Length: 125
Image 1 (spheres, rainbow, N blue to C red):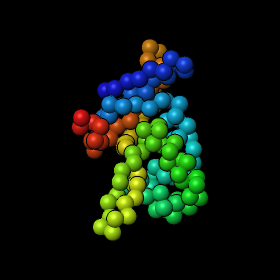
Image 2: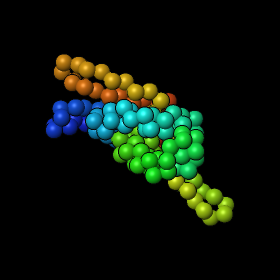
Image 3: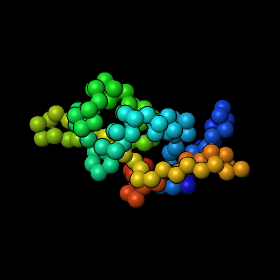
Image 4: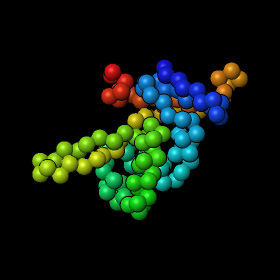
């Protein structure tokens, strides 16, 4: 289990299945945003391109890209390359977790746990 403490806000984020952790504030801000939640829900079962997410979530393309950047920086989605036989490769985005656990303890402070039943490439290293 990895943990990272952020002195400026006293928050700590932990993960059970990954070694890198994003800032608690970034995770909470992304989870609070309705467009981010829609993108996360759409990437539950499969990786999708920004164009596919724009259509499925009925979100403007510019908003989709902004929210994907926010989700990527928070560690909630990962960007991969979808290879195509015609040579037109595209970035696709996949949710990196199955469950989020938020807890508040006396000694630990605020803790966010992201767990996944599927190992991410970072966890295999």
